[in-house]
Image (tube, rainbow over all chains, first blue to last red; front, top):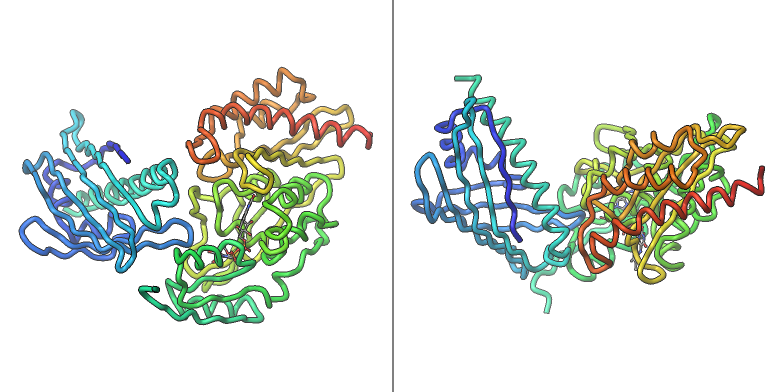
Length: 153
Length: 294
Ligand SMILES: Cc1cc2nc3c(=O)[nH]c(=O)nc-3n(C[C@H](O)[C@H](O)[C@H](O)COP(=O)(O)OP(=O)(O)OC[C@H]3O[C@@H](n4cnc5c(N)ncnc54)[C@H](O)[C@@H]3O)c2cc1C
Protein backbone atom coordinates (compact mmCIF):
# COMPACT_ATOMS: atom_id res chain seq x y z
CA UNK A 1 0.00 0.00 0.00
CA UNK A 2 1.34 3.38 -1.02
CA UNK A 3 0.55 6.57 0.87
CA UNK A 4 1.72 9.93 -0.32
CA UNK A 5 0.97 13.33 1.04
CA UNK A 6 2.39 16.80 1.35
CA UNK A 7 1.51 19.73 3.55
CA UNK A 8 3.02 23.02 4.58
CA UNK A 9 3.61 24.44 8.01
CA UNK A 10 4.31 28.00 8.95
CA UNK A 11 7.72 27.31 10.52
CA UNK A 12 11.30 27.45 9.20
CA UNK A 13 12.91 24.30 7.84
CA UNK A 14 15.47 24.14 10.65
CA UNK A 15 12.69 23.95 13.23
CA UNK A 16 10.72 21.36 11.29
CA UNK A 17 13.85 19.26 10.98
CA UNK A 18 14.62 19.48 14.69
CA UNK A 19 11.10 18.40 15.53
CA UNK A 20 10.91 15.42 13.20
CA UNK A 21 14.25 14.14 14.48
CA UNK A 22 13.18 14.50 18.11
CA UNK A 23 11.46 11.31 19.31
CA UNK A 24 9.99 13.03 22.37
CA UNK A 25 8.16 15.49 20.11
CA UNK A 26 7.01 12.82 17.68
CA UNK A 27 5.17 10.83 20.38
CA UNK A 28 2.53 13.54 20.49
CA UNK A 29 2.17 13.73 16.70
CA UNK A 30 2.08 10.10 15.58
CA UNK A 31 -1.51 8.90 16.08
CA UNK A 32 -1.64 6.05 18.60
CA UNK A 33 2.02 6.43 19.63
CA UNK A 34 2.52 5.83 23.34
CA UNK A 35 6.30 5.86 23.64
CA UNK A 36 9.54 6.07 21.67
CA UNK A 37 12.94 5.17 23.06
CA UNK A 38 16.33 5.40 21.46
CA UNK A 39 17.92 1.95 21.16
CA UNK A 40 21.13 2.98 19.40
CA UNK A 41 22.44 5.55 16.97
CA UNK A 42 19.52 6.19 14.63
CA UNK A 43 17.45 3.27 15.87
CA UNK A 44 14.34 3.50 17.96
CA UNK A 45 11.66 1.35 19.54
CA UNK A 46 8.12 2.71 19.59
CA UNK A 47 4.81 1.47 20.98
CA UNK A 48 1.99 2.31 18.59
CA UNK A 49 -1.68 1.33 18.78
CA UNK A 50 -3.74 1.21 15.62
CA UNK A 51 -7.49 0.95 16.25
CA UNK A 52 -10.06 0.01 13.70
CA UNK A 53 -13.46 -0.21 15.36
CA UNK A 54 -13.22 -2.47 18.42
CA UNK A 55 -9.95 -4.01 17.19
CA UNK A 56 -6.94 -2.41 18.81
CA UNK A 57 -3.61 -3.65 17.54
CA UNK A 58 -0.64 -2.69 19.73
CA UNK A 59 2.56 -2.79 17.76
CA UNK A 60 6.06 -2.77 19.08
CA UNK A 61 7.90 -1.03 16.26
CA UNK A 62 11.61 -1.10 15.49
CA UNK A 63 12.45 2.03 13.52
CA UNK A 64 15.76 2.70 11.82
CA UNK A 65 16.91 5.80 10.00
CA UNK A 66 18.58 4.30 6.94
CA UNK A 67 19.41 7.42 5.00
CA UNK A 68 19.40 11.13 5.70
CA UNK A 69 20.51 14.48 4.39
CA UNK A 70 20.41 16.85 7.31
CA UNK A 71 17.64 19.46 7.05
CA UNK A 72 16.35 17.93 3.81
CA UNK A 73 15.55 14.29 3.71
CA UNK A 74 15.11 11.24 5.88
CA UNK A 75 14.30 7.66 5.01
CA UNK A 76 13.20 5.25 7.70
CA UNK A 77 12.48 1.58 7.81
CA UNK A 78 9.93 0.37 10.35
CA UNK A 79 8.98 -3.13 11.37
CA UNK A 80 6.33 -3.91 13.92
CA UNK A 81 4.94 -6.98 15.57
CA UNK A 82 2.03 -7.37 17.86
CA UNK A 83 3.05 -9.47 20.86
CA UNK A 84 2.29 -13.12 20.31
CA UNK A 85 -0.09 -12.37 17.48
CA UNK A 86 0.57 -12.85 13.82
CA UNK A 87 0.08 -9.17 13.03
CA UNK A 88 2.96 -7.61 11.22
CA UNK A 89 3.43 -4.13 9.83
CA UNK A 90 6.36 -3.06 7.70
CA UNK A 91 7.03 0.31 6.16
CA UNK A 92 9.61 2.28 4.27
CA UNK A 93 8.97 5.99 4.59
CA UNK A 94 10.53 9.04 3.01
CA UNK A 95 10.18 12.56 4.25
CA UNK A 96 11.48 15.53 2.32
CA UNK A 97 11.52 19.16 3.47
CA UNK A 98 11.52 22.16 1.14
CA UNK A 99 11.44 25.90 1.83
CA UNK A 100 8.34 27.65 0.62
CA UNK A 101 8.88 30.88 -1.35
CA UNK A 102 6.60 32.77 1.05
CA UNK A 103 8.34 31.31 4.13
CA UNK A 104 7.32 28.14 5.89
CA UNK A 105 8.20 24.57 5.00
CA UNK A 106 6.66 21.94 2.78
CA UNK A 107 6.76 18.42 4.13
CA UNK A 108 6.45 15.75 1.50
CA UNK A 109 5.82 12.30 2.84
CA UNK A 110 5.56 8.98 1.08
CA UNK A 111 5.36 5.54 2.56
CA UNK A 112 5.05 1.97 1.38
CA UNK A 113 3.23 0.01 4.06
CA UNK A 114 2.43 -3.67 4.33
CA UNK A 115 0.08 -4.97 6.96
CA UNK A 116 -0.87 -8.55 7.64
CA UNK A 117 -2.75 -10.27 10.45
CA UNK A 118 -5.68 -8.86 12.38
CA UNK A 119 -5.81 -5.60 10.50
CA UNK A 120 -5.06 -7.23 7.17
CA UNK A 121 -8.62 -8.59 7.12
CA UNK A 122 -10.00 -5.17 6.28
CA UNK A 123 -8.64 -5.28 2.74
CA UNK A 124 -6.35 -2.89 0.94
CA UNK A 125 -8.98 -0.35 -0.12
CA UNK A 126 -10.18 0.27 3.40
CA UNK A 127 -6.74 0.16 5.01
CA UNK A 128 -5.59 2.85 2.61
CA UNK A 129 -8.49 5.07 3.68
CA UNK A 130 -7.67 4.43 7.32
CA UNK A 131 -3.97 5.12 6.76
CA UNK A 132 -4.79 8.34 4.92
CA UNK A 133 -6.90 9.44 7.85
CA UNK A 134 -4.07 8.71 10.28
CA UNK A 135 -1.75 10.74 8.05
CA UNK A 136 -4.20 13.65 8.20
CA UNK A 137 -4.20 13.44 12.00
CA UNK A 138 -0.39 13.50 12.00
CA UNK A 139 -0.47 16.58 9.80
CA UNK A 140 -2.87 18.35 12.13
CA UNK A 141 -0.87 17.61 15.30
CA UNK A 142 2.46 18.31 13.67
CA UNK A 143 1.32 21.65 12.33
CA UNK A 144 -0.04 22.65 15.73
CA UNK A 145 3.27 21.69 17.35
CA UNK A 146 5.52 23.38 14.78
CA UNK A 147 3.52 26.58 14.72
CA UNK A 148 3.04 26.77 18.48
CA UNK A 149 6.74 26.43 19.21
CA UNK A 150 7.41 29.22 16.75
CA UNK A 151 5.38 31.66 18.81
CA UNK A 152 7.10 30.75 22.08
CA UNK A 153 10.55 31.59 20.70
CA UNK B 1 -3.35 -24.04 21.15
CA UNK B 2 -4.22 -20.68 22.55
CA UNK B 3 -1.12 -18.60 22.94
CA UNK B 4 -2.62 -16.26 25.49
CA UNK B 5 -5.60 -16.87 27.70
CA UNK B 6 -7.14 -13.73 29.04
CA UNK B 7 -10.03 -14.08 31.41
CA UNK B 8 -13.02 -11.96 30.58
CA UNK B 9 -14.98 -10.58 33.48
CA UNK B 10 -18.73 -10.33 32.70
CA UNK B 11 -21.00 -7.70 34.25
CA UNK B 12 -24.70 -7.02 33.81
CA UNK B 13 -25.58 -3.69 35.41
CA UNK B 14 -29.15 -2.39 35.88
CA UNK B 15 -28.49 1.30 35.19
CA UNK B 16 -26.60 3.38 32.64
CA UNK B 17 -24.59 5.03 35.41
CA UNK B 18 -23.43 1.66 36.74
CA UNK B 19 -22.49 0.55 33.23
CA UNK B 20 -20.41 3.66 32.69
CA UNK B 21 -18.63 3.16 36.03
CA UNK B 22 -17.91 -0.51 35.28
CA UNK B 23 -16.41 0.43 31.92
CA UNK B 24 -14.34 3.22 33.40
CA UNK B 25 -12.95 0.99 36.18
CA UNK B 26 -11.71 -1.62 33.72
CA UNK B 27 -10.17 0.90 31.31
CA UNK B 28 -9.05 0.46 27.74
CA UNK B 29 -9.80 -3.22 27.22
CA UNK B 30 -13.36 -3.23 28.57
CA UNK B 31 -16.20 -3.33 26.04
CA UNK B 32 -19.94 -2.85 26.26
CA UNK B 33 -21.90 -5.71 24.73
CA UNK B 34 -25.43 -5.37 23.36
CA UNK B 35 -26.70 -8.00 20.93
CA UNK B 36 -23.28 -9.58 20.58
CA UNK B 37 -23.92 -10.27 16.88
CA UNK B 38 -20.66 -8.60 15.92
CA UNK B 39 -18.63 -8.59 19.13
CA UNK B 40 -18.99 -12.33 19.85
CA UNK B 41 -17.92 -13.13 16.28
CA UNK B 42 -14.85 -10.91 16.72
CA UNK B 43 -14.06 -12.59 20.04
CA UNK B 44 -14.48 -16.07 18.58
CA UNK B 45 -12.08 -15.14 15.81
CA UNK B 46 -9.77 -13.87 18.59
CA UNK B 47 -9.62 -10.44 16.99
CA UNK B 48 -10.82 -8.80 20.20
CA UNK B 49 -10.16 -10.05 23.75
CA UNK B 50 -11.92 -7.77 26.21
CA UNK B 51 -10.79 -7.82 29.84
CA UNK B 52 -14.37 -7.03 30.84
CA UNK B 53 -17.71 -7.21 29.07
CA UNK B 54 -20.45 -4.92 30.32
CA UNK B 55 -23.79 -6.19 29.04
CA UNK B 56 -26.33 -3.44 28.44
CA UNK B 57 -29.23 -5.88 28.15
CA UNK B 58 -30.61 -5.56 31.71
CA UNK B 59 -30.84 -1.75 31.64
CA UNK B 60 -34.54 -1.06 31.45
CA UNK B 61 -34.44 2.40 29.87
CA UNK B 62 -32.33 1.15 26.96
CA UNK B 63 -34.91 -1.48 26.00
CA UNK B 64 -37.77 1.01 25.50
CA UNK B 65 -39.00 2.85 22.42
CA UNK B 66 -41.18 5.77 23.40
CA UNK B 67 -43.24 8.35 21.59
CA UNK B 68 -42.57 11.67 23.35
CA UNK B 69 -45.17 14.39 23.85
CA UNK B 70 -43.36 16.74 21.42
CA UNK B 71 -43.73 14.16 18.61
CA UNK B 72 -40.16 12.94 18.76
CA UNK B 73 -39.43 9.23 19.11
CA UNK B 74 -36.77 7.88 21.45
CA UNK B 75 -35.37 4.49 20.45
CA UNK B 76 -33.41 2.90 23.31
CA UNK B 77 -29.96 1.60 22.35
CA UNK B 78 -30.88 -2.03 23.17
CA UNK B 79 -33.83 -2.14 20.74
CA UNK B 80 -33.32 -5.07 18.38
CA UNK B 81 -33.42 -4.55 14.61
CA UNK B 82 -36.55 -6.71 14.45
CA UNK B 83 -38.35 -4.50 16.98
CA UNK B 84 -37.42 -1.35 15.08
CA UNK B 85 -38.50 -2.91 11.77
CA UNK B 86 -42.02 -3.43 13.21
CA UNK B 87 -42.09 -0.36 15.47
CA UNK B 88 -45.59 1.16 15.48
CA UNK B 89 -44.26 4.49 16.80
CA UNK B 90 -42.40 5.04 13.54
CA UNK B 91 -44.68 6.80 11.08
CA UNK B 92 -44.31 9.05 8.03
CA UNK B 93 -40.65 10.07 7.45
CA UNK B 94 -39.52 7.97 10.42
CA UNK B 95 -40.18 4.92 8.28
CA UNK B 96 -36.82 5.45 6.66
CA UNK B 97 -35.43 3.99 9.91
CA UNK B 98 -37.83 1.04 10.17
CA UNK B 99 -37.19 0.42 6.46
CA UNK B 100 -33.44 0.24 7.11
CA UNK B 101 -33.96 -2.06 10.13
CA UNK B 102 -36.10 -4.46 8.10
CA UNK B 103 -33.34 -4.86 5.53
CA UNK B 104 -30.46 -5.64 7.88
CA UNK B 105 -28.95 -9.10 7.37
CA UNK B 106 -31.36 -11.96 8.07
CA UNK B 107 -33.94 -12.84 10.77
CA UNK B 108 -31.47 -14.34 13.31
CA UNK B 109 -29.22 -11.24 13.12
CA UNK B 110 -32.26 -8.93 13.32
CA UNK B 111 -33.44 -10.75 16.44
CA UNK B 112 -30.04 -10.31 18.04
CA UNK B 113 -28.49 -7.04 16.84
CA UNK B 114 -29.36 -3.70 18.41
CA UNK B 115 -29.45 -0.14 17.10
CA UNK B 116 -26.90 0.96 19.73
CA UNK B 117 -24.49 -1.84 18.80
CA UNK B 118 -24.88 -1.26 15.10
CA UNK B 119 -24.18 2.46 15.16
CA UNK B 120 -21.32 2.11 17.66
CA UNK B 121 -19.64 -0.46 15.45
CA UNK B 122 -20.27 1.91 12.51
CA UNK B 123 -19.57 -0.43 9.64
CA UNK B 124 -19.26 1.79 6.52
CA UNK B 125 -21.84 -0.44 4.80
CA UNK B 126 -24.31 -0.68 7.72
CA UNK B 127 -27.95 0.21 7.13
CA UNK B 128 -28.86 2.45 10.06
CA UNK B 129 -26.26 5.21 9.56
CA UNK B 130 -27.62 6.69 6.28
CA UNK B 131 -31.20 6.30 7.51
CA UNK B 132 -30.44 8.19 10.72
CA UNK B 133 -28.73 11.01 8.84
CA UNK B 134 -31.71 11.26 6.46
CA UNK B 135 -34.08 11.25 9.46
CA UNK B 136 -32.05 14.05 11.10
CA UNK B 137 -31.71 11.89 14.21
CA UNK B 138 -29.72 12.73 17.29
CA UNK B 139 -27.59 10.24 19.18
CA UNK B 140 -27.70 10.28 22.97
CA UNK B 141 -24.42 9.29 24.60
CA UNK B 142 -23.59 8.60 28.25
CA UNK B 143 -20.11 8.70 29.74
CA UNK B 144 -18.19 9.56 32.88
CA UNK B 145 -19.04 13.24 32.30
CA UNK B 146 -22.80 12.59 32.07
CA UNK B 147 -25.03 12.63 29.00
CA UNK B 148 -24.77 14.52 25.75
CA UNK B 149 -26.58 14.52 22.44
CA UNK B 150 -25.14 15.02 18.98
CA UNK B 151 -26.62 14.98 15.47
CA UNK B 152 -26.18 11.65 13.63
CA UNK B 153 -24.24 13.54 10.97
CA UNK B 154 -21.53 14.40 13.52
CA UNK B 155 -21.53 10.93 15.10
CA UNK B 156 -20.18 8.93 12.16
CA UNK B 157 -16.59 10.00 11.54
CA UNK B 158 -15.87 7.32 8.95
CA UNK B 159 -14.15 3.93 8.55
CA UNK B 160 -15.43 2.52 11.87
CA UNK B 161 -14.68 5.68 13.83
CA UNK B 162 -17.43 7.45 15.76
CA UNK B 163 -17.68 10.45 18.04
CA UNK B 164 -17.77 8.09 21.07
CA UNK B 165 -14.96 8.92 23.50
CA UNK B 166 -13.32 6.09 25.49
CA UNK B 167 -15.75 4.88 28.15
CA UNK B 168 -18.84 6.33 26.48
CA UNK B 169 -21.87 4.33 25.36
CA UNK B 170 -24.81 5.09 23.10
CA UNK B 171 -28.01 5.21 25.15
CA UNK B 172 -30.62 6.21 22.57
CA UNK B 173 -31.42 7.45 19.10
CA UNK B 174 -33.86 10.35 19.02
CA UNK B 175 -35.91 11.05 15.91
CA UNK B 176 -37.31 14.60 15.68
CA UNK B 177 -41.06 15.26 15.22
CA UNK B 178 -42.27 14.80 11.63
CA UNK B 179 -45.33 16.03 9.77
CA UNK B 180 -47.97 13.54 8.68
CA UNK B 181 -47.44 14.40 5.04
CA UNK B 182 -43.76 13.46 5.17
CA UNK B 183 -42.39 10.19 3.84
CA UNK B 184 -39.18 8.20 4.24
CA UNK B 185 -37.66 5.53 2.06
CA UNK B 186 -34.60 3.27 2.33
CA UNK B 187 -33.21 1.45 -0.70
CA UNK B 188 -30.41 -1.08 -0.45
CA UNK B 189 -28.53 -3.04 -3.06
CA UNK B 190 -26.65 -6.16 -1.97
CA UNK B 191 -25.01 -9.01 -3.82
CA UNK B 192 -26.99 -11.69 -2.04
CA UNK B 193 -29.92 -11.51 0.34
CA UNK B 194 -28.75 -10.87 3.90
CA UNK B 195 -25.45 -9.23 3.00
CA UNK B 196 -24.26 -5.76 3.94
CA UNK B 197 -25.08 -3.08 1.38
CA UNK B 198 -23.01 -2.63 -1.73
CA UNK B 199 -24.63 0.80 -1.73
CA UNK B 200 -27.76 2.23 -0.14
CA UNK B 201 -29.81 5.41 -0.27
CA UNK B 202 -31.98 6.94 2.46
CA UNK B 203 -34.37 9.85 1.85
CA UNK B 204 -36.95 11.76 3.85
CA UNK B 205 -39.22 14.22 2.08
CA UNK B 206 -42.10 16.52 2.89
CA UNK B 207 -44.50 17.96 0.31
CA UNK B 208 -47.07 20.74 0.24
CA UNK B 209 -50.69 20.31 -0.92
CA UNK B 210 -49.70 20.65 -4.58
CA UNK B 211 -47.07 17.89 -4.28
CA UNK B 212 -44.10 20.22 -4.41
CA UNK B 213 -41.15 19.15 -2.26
CA UNK B 214 -40.82 21.50 0.71
CA UNK B 215 -38.06 19.71 2.58
CA UNK B 216 -35.76 16.83 1.79
CA UNK B 217 -32.79 15.04 3.35
CA UNK B 218 -30.72 12.46 1.55
CA UNK B 219 -27.82 10.22 2.58
CA UNK B 220 -25.89 7.43 0.87
CA UNK B 221 -24.41 4.36 2.57
CA UNK B 222 -21.64 1.96 1.50
CA UNK B 223 -19.90 4.57 -0.64
CA UNK B 224 -17.43 6.07 1.80
CA UNK B 225 -16.28 5.83 5.40
CA UNK B 226 -19.75 6.59 6.71
CA UNK B 227 -23.08 7.96 5.54
CA UNK B 228 -22.68 10.79 3.02
CA UNK B 229 -25.25 13.54 3.04
CA UNK B 230 -25.40 15.67 -0.09
CA UNK B 231 -26.88 19.06 0.69
CA UNK B 232 -26.43 20.42 -2.84
CA UNK B 233 -28.66 17.63 -4.17
CA UNK B 234 -31.21 18.25 -1.41
CA UNK B 235 -31.37 21.94 -2.33
CA UNK B 236 -31.70 21.09 -6.02
CA UNK B 237 -34.76 18.93 -5.33
CA UNK B 238 -36.58 21.25 -2.96
CA UNK B 239 -39.22 23.16 -4.94
CA UNK B 240 -39.50 20.45 -7.61
CA UNK B 241 -42.12 17.72 -7.96
CA UNK B 242 -39.35 15.11 -8.34
CA UNK B 243 -39.60 15.23 -12.12
CA UNK B 244 -37.21 12.83 -13.86
CA UNK B 245 -34.92 15.65 -15.07
CA UNK B 246 -34.58 17.08 -11.59
CA UNK B 247 -33.77 13.66 -10.13
CA UNK B 248 -31.17 12.94 -12.83
CA UNK B 249 -29.46 16.28 -12.16
CA UNK B 250 -29.53 15.75 -8.40
CA UNK B 251 -28.08 12.25 -8.80
CA UNK B 252 -25.07 13.78 -10.53
CA UNK B 253 -24.50 16.05 -7.56
CA UNK B 254 -24.73 13.03 -5.28
CA UNK B 255 -22.24 10.95 -7.25
CA UNK B 256 -19.73 13.83 -7.15
CA UNK B 257 -19.61 13.61 -3.34
CA UNK B 258 -19.11 9.84 -3.00
CA UNK B 259 -15.82 8.28 -1.92
CA UNK B 260 -16.18 4.53 -2.55
CA UNK B 261 -13.49 1.84 -2.46
CA UNK B 262 -13.04 -1.40 -4.39
CA UNK B 263 -13.80 -4.36 -2.16
CA UNK B 264 -15.18 -7.90 -2.27
CA UNK B 265 -18.71 -6.55 -2.72
CA UNK B 266 -17.96 -4.52 -5.83
CA UNK B 267 -15.76 -1.93 -7.45
CA UNK B 268 -15.83 1.76 -6.65
CA UNK B 269 -16.85 2.43 -10.24
CA UNK B 270 -19.83 0.09 -10.03
CA UNK B 271 -21.01 1.80 -6.86
CA UNK B 272 -20.97 5.17 -8.62
CA UNK B 273 -23.17 3.67 -11.33
CA UNK B 274 -25.79 2.12 -9.07
CA UNK B 275 -26.36 5.03 -6.70
CA UNK B 276 -28.34 7.12 -9.25
CA UNK B 277 -30.55 4.05 -9.87
CA UNK B 278 -31.12 3.55 -6.17
CA UNK B 279 -32.06 7.19 -5.83
CA UNK B 280 -34.50 6.93 -8.71
CA UNK B 281 -35.97 3.78 -7.18
CA UNK B 282 -36.36 5.48 -3.80
CA UNK B 283 -38.31 8.36 -5.35
CA UNK B 284 -40.48 6.04 -7.47
CA UNK B 285 -41.36 3.94 -4.45
CA UNK B 286 -42.11 7.03 -2.39
CA UNK B 287 -44.46 8.42 -4.98
CA UNK B 288 -46.21 5.05 -5.13
CA UNK B 289 -46.67 4.79 -1.39
CA UNK B 290 -47.94 8.36 -1.24
CA UNK B 291 -50.44 8.24 -4.06
CA UNK B 292 -53.03 5.90 -2.57
CA UNK B 293 -53.17 8.16 0.48
CA UNK B 294 -53.93 11.32 -1.52
C1 LIG C 1 -23.96 -12.39 9.53
C2 LIG C 1 -24.16 -10.92 9.81
C3 LIG C 1 -24.70 -10.11 8.83
C4 LIG C 1 -24.90 -8.75 9.06
N1 LIG C 1 -25.47 -7.97 8.08
C5 LIG C 1 -25.72 -6.68 8.33
C6 LIG C 1 -26.38 -5.86 7.36
O1 LIG C 1 -26.77 -6.30 6.30
N2 LIG C 1 -26.57 -4.56 7.67
C7 LIG C 1 -26.19 -4.02 8.86
O2 LIG C 1 -26.39 -2.83 9.07
N3 LIG C 1 -25.58 -4.76 9.80
C8 LIG C 1 -25.35 -6.08 9.57
N4 LIG C 1 -24.75 -6.85 10.54
C9 LIG C 1 -24.36 -6.24 11.80
C10 LIG C 1 -25.49 -6.37 12.80
O3 LIG C 1 -26.47 -5.40 12.53
C11 LIG C 1 -25.00 -6.24 14.24
O4 LIG C 1 -26.06 -6.53 15.04
C12 LIG C 1 -24.49 -4.89 14.66
O5 LIG C 1 -23.42 -4.45 13.90
C13 LIG C 1 -23.99 -4.92 16.09
O6 LIG C 1 -25.05 -4.89 16.97
P1 LIG C 1 -25.01 -5.68 18.30
O7 LIG C 1 -26.10 -5.16 19.17
O8 LIG C 1 -25.02 -7.13 18.04
O9 LIG C 1 -23.61 -5.20 18.91
P2 LIG C 1 -22.46 -5.99 19.66
O10 LIG C 1 -21.97 -7.10 18.81
O11 LIG C 1 -22.92 -6.30 21.04
O12 LIG C 1 -21.36 -4.84 19.73
C14 LIG C 1 -20.73 -4.34 18.57
C15 LIG C 1 -19.68 -3.30 18.96
O13 LIG C 1 -20.29 -2.13 19.48
C16 LIG C 1 -19.97 -1.91 20.85
N5 LIG C 1 -21.23 -1.55 21.49
C17 LIG C 1 -22.37 -2.31 21.57
N6 LIG C 1 -23.36 -1.59 22.11
C18 LIG C 1 -22.88 -0.36 22.37
C19 LIG C 1 -23.44 0.84 22.92
N7 LIG C 1 -24.72 0.93 23.27
N8 LIG C 1 -22.64 1.92 23.03
C20 LIG C 1 -21.34 1.87 22.66
N9 LIG C 1 -20.75 0.77 22.11
C21 LIG C 1 -21.52 -0.32 21.97
C22 LIG C 1 -19.36 -3.21 21.34
O14 LIG C 1 -18.42 -2.99 22.35
C23 LIG C 1 -18.74 -3.76 20.07
O15 LIG C 1 -17.49 -3.16 19.86
C24 LIG C 1 -24.54 -8.21 10.33
C25 LIG C 1 -23.97 -9.01 11.31
C26 LIG C 1 -23.79 -10.36 11.08
C27 LIG C 1 -23.21 -11.20 12.18
